[in-house]
Amino acid sequence: MYVEKSKVESVQKISENIFLIKVLAPSIASLVKPGQFCNIKVSENSFPLLRRPFSICDVEGDYLFFLFDIHGEGTKLISKKKPGEFLELLGPLGNGFNYKEGFDTAVIVAGGLGVAPFPFLLKNLTANKKVICLLGGRSKKSIVTYGLKNVLAATDDGSEGFHGTVVELLKRENKNISKDKFRIFACGPTPMLKALQSYCVENNFDCQISVECAMACGFGICQGCPIEPTNDGSYLLVCKDGPVFEAKSVKL
Figure (cartoon, one colour):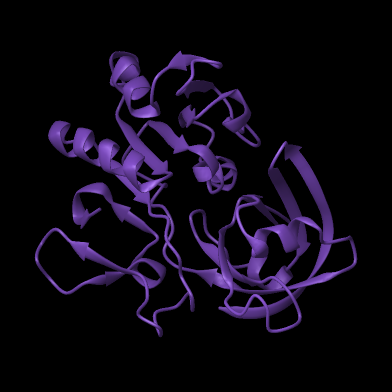
């Protein structure tokens, strides 16, 4: 884990409210694994006080990429960063995906900006793995395909692809997917993950979920991101024990 003062290379507007920032962070880039995250200090003064957690979207050499939308003062400040300015990164943090063995087809299930960790995951899959990406959003504007392939979309308003939720889309596609040994990798809003978790546990599907929540410290000191395990053991921490969990192992 490093604290790294990272120079901004570029900030790209992907769609109306979604941005991709590229930063130079060689120490973190040399260690990061798919599914891990960084906590980012968004300004050089004391406001906003707390760091913000961001999934590491992609890695190219010494550069990290973060995909985000504007939903508060912190992300608004990041979207206005100029090339040559700096962000302070803490990372890589958390435990990522188990993606090397045990399956033939990777099924990505993402809701909204839950797509963020998957470009880097796909880049690290071996060439013999099949990939299917199922993306869900409120409308066509919510579907982000950066770094993904073989995409099928589901939208709440029917403006793109399947009219319904991404979990309903997965159920529709299950016959095609289940021809091979598959593993589901998922990230998105908690209601989506709960619906997916219920479906996967009921059908004994191999599924890993990346949980979204506020994480102030990022490495377990503040105890601010507890999650209950299904085995009635001690509470886990999303930042330290996750953010990726086996779907059957935690209560959402």
